[in-house]
Length: 268
Ligand code: BGC
Image 1 (tube, rainbow, N blue to C red):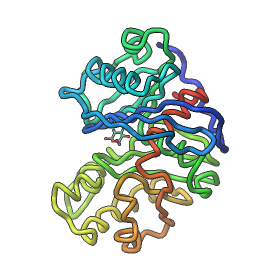
Image 2 (image 1 turned 90 degrees about the vertical axis):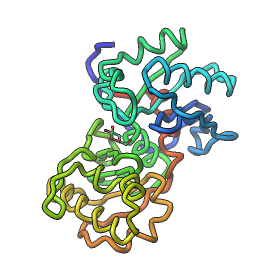
Image 3 (image 1 turned 180 degrees about the vertical axis):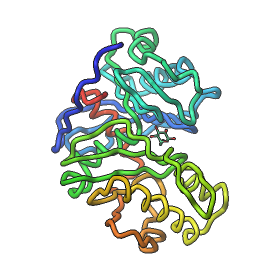
Image 4 (image 1 turned 30 degrees about the horizontal axis):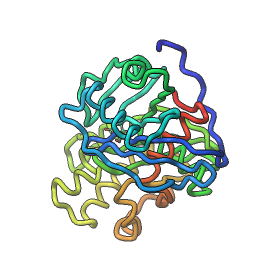
């Protein structure tokens, strides 16, 4: 749908009712029913391995399978590791490059006819969920919310409102004389890939955050993603001046943000 990108209002409070969210990642596609009053899942989360290659049609078929397993007949919110503008994917990280240029509305008109489906960037979804159900500080002032996982995702927040599709994980950072993408250096996948200790990895996170700090000067960083569960192992090691606190929602955030986006019409 080649419509103008609407502004993205952000609900500073929880909503009502039940919605369905799906989080599309490089390794798994996860879905759950979300209670919008609390931001909690209703029942279990289901995960299906991401089909390879993760083309739009293959991913859409997996989303249909998740919807079917939940017997869900309402609208579907979806996160993707992509820039999404006017419901068109403009980038593709850890999913098939054929996503680039995909019209998501048209894709799901074919796979889930008659159903409202909206997509938004995975980190934007997680940031919106944090604002509505998580850390109170995410609602005030200039906040950079980051997810550390396969990549580094970002959601820029101002008084809880989202500036969508920032992609600071791809920013070039000079580390020990080598210039590399921030996420290649300091994602949690980089920690695993290079078998880095928390101490060594935290040094890299510090370098990356210092770069973001120098350019954007937020009041606060909030860090999410699976590795934020172990924040006591690395946050105390950071030397950066800007405060850095862990997200409250962690891995639930993407699904919850997707569910909010389709219900509250927040998707870009
Ligand atoms: C992608 C972002 C995504 C992030 C986390 C990056 O590689 O470019 O769109 O938010 O990974 O999945």
